[in-house]
Each structure stands twice: as C-alpha cells, then as structure tokens.
Image (cartoon, rainbow, N blue to C red; front, top):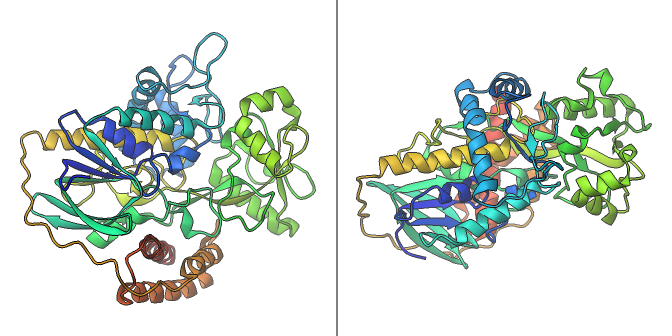
Length: 488
C-alpha cells in the first residue's frame, strides 16, 4: 500500500468497485475492504437489478412512478429520474463489457421478472444469486486494472481534512497507518448489525456514516429503515444473520400465510403479496397481533419442483439445509432488518457537503428511495451514483496537483480492553425500540443508554481494534436513529 493515492474508496460492494472501474488508467485508486474483497451486502443480494431495458411494454415514467409510490413520494424526483434513465446503460455495461451472466429466455433475450411494487417485469437476474454474480465479475475486472490497488482487511476509522484533501487513518493487520488523497469516496454499505436480526453481512456496522457524522456531514433520514417481510424463520432462532427469501419468490406467485396457513394480505392492502416491502412487513406485524402468534409462511410449492429448483436454486438448497423443502411445504418467514434508505446526504453527483468527500451506495442518501426502497433498486443505485462520483471527481481533478503536508504519526493501537457485550446490548435496544413499528417509551429509555455508551467509548482509552471501531459506529448510528424517531 502506497502512502498517497488520487482517490481512496472505502468499501468493495457494487458502488465502491464500479466507482473504481470508472476512473481512467492515470488515476491511482485505493479500495479499502474491511474483510476480503468479495465480502459485502452486494454479494448477498438475491433478486436482481431493476432497469427498463425494453421500451415496448415498459417506460422510464412507469419505473419512476413505481419508485415514487414505494417511497411514499418522499423521494427526490430529480435523483429518481437520473436513476431510471441512466441506470439501463450501466446494467448493459455489466453484461456486455464485464461478463455478468443474467438469465435469458429461450429466444436469447434477458429474462426479466416481477417483484413487489413493480408494475412491469423489469428485474434482470442471475437465478437467485444476482448480487454474487455481479460482485464476482466486478472483482475480476478490478484485479485486471493496474491503477487500482485493493487493501483487504483494512478499516478506515478516521478522516482528517487537510489543504486539498484528507489524511485517511486506516487500521490494517492490527496496526494504524496514514494515507493521503485529495478525494475520498465512502461506499461502506449499511447498518444491519445495529439490529438483533438482519439479512446484512457482518461487516455492515455503519462505519462510513459514523465517519461522516464525526466530520460534520449532514445525515438524512437514518430512521428510514426497511424491514424485509420474508427473512427465513426456520432453523436456529438465535441466528443473528438471517437468510433472505427473495422478493422474487413473491414476484413469481408465492402466497403469504398466517399461523393458520391462511392468506391474509387482502385484509391490509389490495395489492396483496405484491405490495411494497414496508406495507407487507407492517401487515405481518399487525396480523401477528391479531392472531397473537408470530408463525408466518411463504408458499410457492404449487409451482412445482422443476420450476423452483431452476429458478431459486440457492434458496431451495438453503431451506433444505434447515429441513424445509419449498417444493413440498411452506417456508417459515418473519420480518427482520434489511436496508437503509437514509444515510450521508449527497447531491446528484454523490458529493457530500464536505469538499472532496463523496458517498455512494447504501451508506449514502441520494433521495432515490424516499421512505421505502422499491425492490431491486439498490444495486441500480450503487451503479449509477458510484459512476457519477467517479465522473465528478475526474472533472474536478483534471488540472489539479496534490501535495500533502508532513504526515502525522500513526495512532497508537494500545489501550484498555473493550467491555464485552456492548454491541449486543445495542442490538437489543434497537430491536425493542424501533423494529417495524417504533415503541416510543423504549426509544426514550434506549437513547439514554446509548448516549452513556458513546461517552464511555470516547473517554475510556480503549485499544484501537476492529471491535472498538465497529462498536463506536453502532452506538453512533443507534443514537442518530433514535433521535430522529423521537423528533418525528
């Protein structure tokens, strides 16, 4: 790893890697990965990418309207317009230039499916592991680029502003390092680990959001959290990371059933199983209260063994590992944390309100999703605004030179051991106070505890470790969420 780069990108999901690939060969780019290069929420994405690739039976206006409806019209229409009109070309680049193998129909055209909230079949996919396929091909492309350096097991934990750029403080292999760059892109993903149960990767601890908050960036709508209605509820009930039963299963015709194995969505929304995610999740919670029972199911067995094994091979095998055969019986499901609509406030070029600092992907708030993300718009957002960040940086840096001041001494990593269990306590507070339908009493009490944790973390002279960095990030994110809920 060099001491100086033209751009530092923190994160190796779709936004970070696609951003890196949009820089020319004369730009030295550093990609920081908290774990290995392929570990991200992108890698876990199942359903697909929503994009209007055929204007015969679809339109940009329809995709925009579906996005606005799902987001309760709290979306930024300018950002949504950019997403739906520019996104198709980025998706085409995935399969034409980067080799992403989207599923095809017998006639050779891409096979688009339907998901909740969409009025047309516009989600292109690679079976039920689209994110993994995209992540794999992006990683392969990045490795071929001589100008992109990838630093695995490296955590960006602080940014110091300097004249013309930043000093980035990175924890790598247990040691602190300082790296300089005129531009930084935060693509650190979501906040899943702040909740007791989540579909997110273990690395999703909100580090980029905490970094931006500490620097004084505007953070918007962090309480706009999406709880996916159909996480797998079989197997070990104490498993923190829940396996997602893709939106595409409902899109292909699955029925939601209550504890009596009866359909119930007609009681809550005329769109039935194809209502947007937040509507379905709230409907399940209301139905669980009506029935005084939290057993719910997703039934698509009527589609037949051949169809299900070919369309959803990963979901089929994951369910089978827990003793559930989705070709013969309903899948046990229940809502859990899935996605963040808010984050670091950015403009249409992914720029924050701090000069030379950008954010893209789930950690950023572009305004695209409004109050609730439309299914399969997340990978699209990462592509579009990751690219726009790179393009804006290239425009602004065309005639620039960067000469950082003398480098500071790296931080000492020595200190007291972190008290055990603080992260789990934060999880329990968030699960009690802000799961699907907030409990205002629990919000007020939880905020007091969280604020005590933050004060202790900042004054306790703890050792600089990954665990410490992540716990501070989780506490900061929890504080912002609870404050926003309280303010509303």
